[in-house]
Amino acid sequence: MNLYNLLQASLSDPNSPNILLTVSLSDLHQLVVDTIDATRDRLLPLFMKADEDRLLTKAEVCAKLGIKPTSVWNLVQKGKLTAIKVGRSSRYKLSEVTAILDAKND
Image (cartoon, rainbow, N blue to C red; front, side):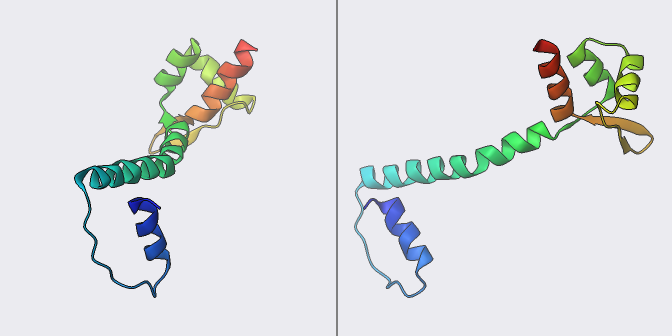
């Protein structure tokens, strides 16, 4: 069992005893690497989802789709794009724009 797994096991068991360890520098380095890898694996999907749900301005939608602002309005009217009001302006989900691009490329 490596240090990372040992620490994870002791955290999940409230009755685990306190122990004193002597750790080599290479084992400590591996613990840091394992911790970073586990954190990245846990957080990366969250960042990917957050980026997918990012809101775009009309100008950004026009640039991504290569269309004019009136075409954005037409997509909203057809229900292919949802306009989300932010103050006095509208924003559009990146995931919906990506879906339109994917359908366009098929």
